Image (cartoon, rainbow, N blue to C red; front, side, top):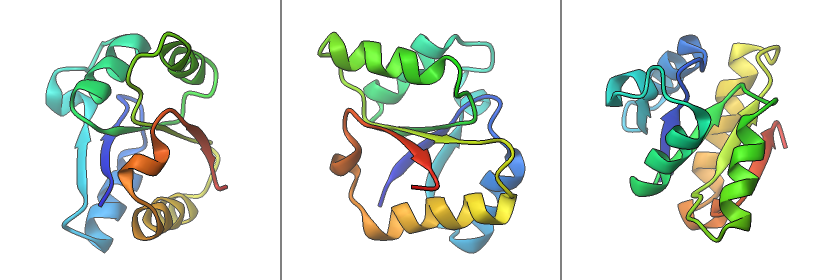
Length: 116
């Protein structure tokens, strides 16, 4: 199962919906692990240290920081970028599909814009 970290501004409705659909999902929120005001680079570093794919709506800067980690040969377990305009139900379905059909290691070093 994928291990996920929801960025500080990630839609809480999506997180709650994921947990309602599959209570066993391994997801933590940035605010719950002391990353409420952390910059993107720190969030990605924490995710790498803890083996978690980051969920974000930040299309502007987060992918750039993720690509910088990859270029510097630093660990980057993956980044899922979802538009904040994507309906909540569709976002939940896309994440659940990734959880059901892929393994954690498949996302290493990748930035994926959902839906695929």
